[in-house]
Image 1 (cartoon, helix red, strand yellow):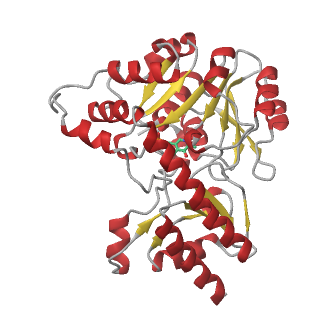
Image 2 (cartoon, protein in one colour):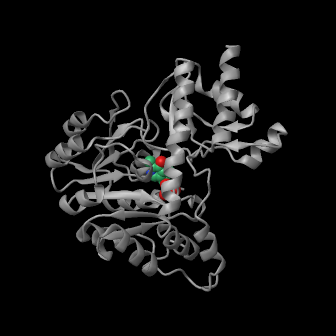
Length: 362
Ligand SMILES: *Cc1c(COP(=O)(O)O)cnc(C)c1O
């Protein structure tokens, strides 16, 4: 077989360990997974009600236009229906964008460490990849501008950034967007948008209507608690959406996901409660880090990257044996850190107790 050469260098995405696998391996009854930034409070009850009343039937293809979800979301965001594109998770939108714009004669600019899928997809398309190191957890926007060349087709911004949790302030983002040539697509991945509390955060949807080369990506996988159903969306002006649409598979978004997401949007009370509980949960982590004098990045998300100053895999392993699945920073570009999802109050207490015990032994 003559595979694309670059495929041979890639490994499949390594997801956070599954609860069942860990239970079996370590013979534990109770496992708490705080590794994939899922919502510890699940999803809105209204979603469950909507799913139970599902009339469509599984023999029927999903609505390829996601009509109801599109109407609901366009009215919620105050954008036109033609300014939206849906993906099988925002991962799928990253793939669609890469497929539409990247090729061996194109270059693409991204921060590092950041979300792994920008690079992964760029490698598959054979594009020239320009990675710009973060400074103190933040995007180095000046260096990203300087990395642009004649071949640059796509720039990826992750704000708040995974895995650091840090965000780009409004004034810096606007100054950046003003300088990027208008024929280069800027992708602003806002998977954690709903968790943000910073005052100097921007209104990305407004920016997408102002900047004709900006697409905003969001997801129902994080605060909405619907990761299993795979729904992400992009907001951009209609000419971007029109250009991307042929690269989207016709039935990429499943029926149950469409139904669930439509119901989820209507329960903003649930979202506000989760956002509030997340901030309270973060205080538990901040307090712990101060007590143990551990460095961390202040975060606008539902996870925190903590530098334990010990091999991240070792911290990961010790927490695993105590019943907590977290993410080692090693694969995320921070070898002595762990990334922990903010859970419920009790889960946070538990994982911090386990981490405290481990650190005390060191
Ligand atoms: C979780 C995550 C995604 C992927 O979300 P899905 O919609 O589940 O595919 C995209 N970007 C970032 C930064 C994420 O953390």
